[in-house]
Image 1: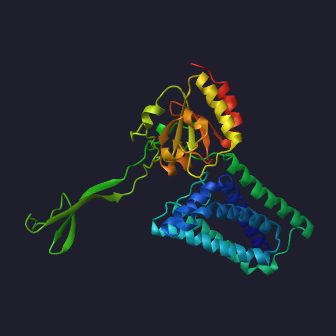
Image 2 (image 1 turned 135 degrees about the horizontal axis):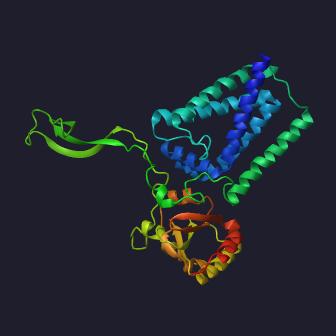
Image 3 (image 1 turned 60 degrees about the horizontal axis):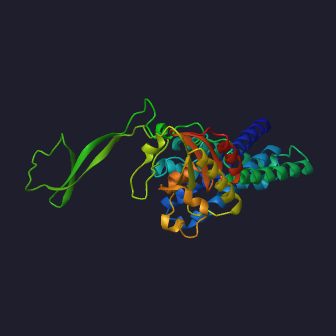
Length: 376
């Protein structure tokens, strides 16, 4: 039993550390996933707290994983782990059986799992953690108290410091469809070899106070215009495909409402896209650097576009002067927060391919890159 218990501890500890580290690379991703659950449950009032929940949950996963490995305070952590895995199993089970959530984001965007894969993983962890909980009084610490506390202290510091870094800058490992090197128009297309959804046109008619559905090839034998009243028609899903593109809902619209996405992304020249979402904070440090960047861009005839979900009339209320040099484009806020994990962020794009991108905290690096670009 002792050997089995030690193996179980190692598996659970490593999985929790690994899961936490993957999510710590992009805590905003988990925050957005929480918002998705809250919106489905009608708890949108919690949206403003999801980033705090995300950071704390990720840190706890990493700290709990280390605690399990060193066997520190197992009476306490076995309870905490059991509560956490029951909660996770509920979430993944809800995503699987309700069909309202595509996946739970258990390993972030770097290791996407389907709803059924996430649920099976949590069921396995529930069994393993159940064993640890059952045998919690028999687990002895692998290290003495001093070394255990030192290990947990540095784990805690690292967990929060790493998340702070990626929130201020950008994820260390970019697993999003908008990562450097990706071509946006290509990612907006269905993957090669994918199978589209199979649908059939379905008609809904009313007869005798009851609604009846049928397709074009199986009209009722007694159908006639006098007794059947048309209600609606819709496309009924027959078979779910896998033709969902990596980038969806990314549309750049001018002030007049024209969709200019393809026209802009097909231009064979350097462009700067300044992503600005509601909730942004104007700070002198990055506005000064952005001004210098756009001066250099103008010298090289590089056009700048401001991609934002903020109404243009709001942007015109005491904006920094540098905002005025950008051509404004409106975009869906979900697409913006998926593309730009920092608010604001700057992308360098050429013919739809992302050459580079920077958080507002790294505009000094952007200035260096733009300064070295060839002029026209």
